[in-house]
Image 1 (cartoon, rainbow, N blue to C red):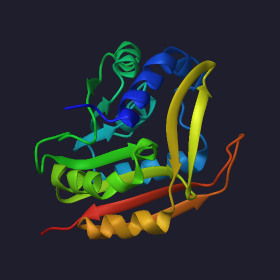
Image 2 (cartoon, one colour):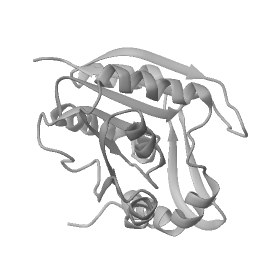
Image 3 (cartoon, helix red, strand yellow):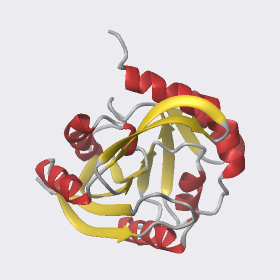
Length: 213
């Protein structure tokens, strides 16, 4: 079966930029509101509960979640990113994988984080991916999404000092909330913040809980 072009492009782009991505983005998660959202998620899930970060990149958010007390594993589409993450955080677990495939055993997770990773998916795939997230979470498990808020496609041709080609989708929080609800989640909070530090659009964070049925 032929791999979708968007998946091939995204993997190749992040393999290309992995080393410079790690060099240019610090280990500390910024800005403070983003850290507050992650802290609220960690406290809600509870200490030492199994959590998966999907689209973990170089592992900086995975490591931050571990410092917040979670038993966290990172998964990323890009082998290059995973190699950097393993080198930077040898005490943590990282694996290569795609959120369009089964990412964990059904009902095995207390929490799942997709921190600016669903923005690379064609929007029509989101309902299917959210259904997969629900299957991976135990009843009552928690989900955190971080996205670029808007409603447009940004075709990137350069990133982190490299010529690459991949898509970034700005996603409307209201639509995501409706899709999560349809997938069997109860959205518990939506946080919208304005751009900072050169960002071109608002950022949105959605916290949701898997229904018990």
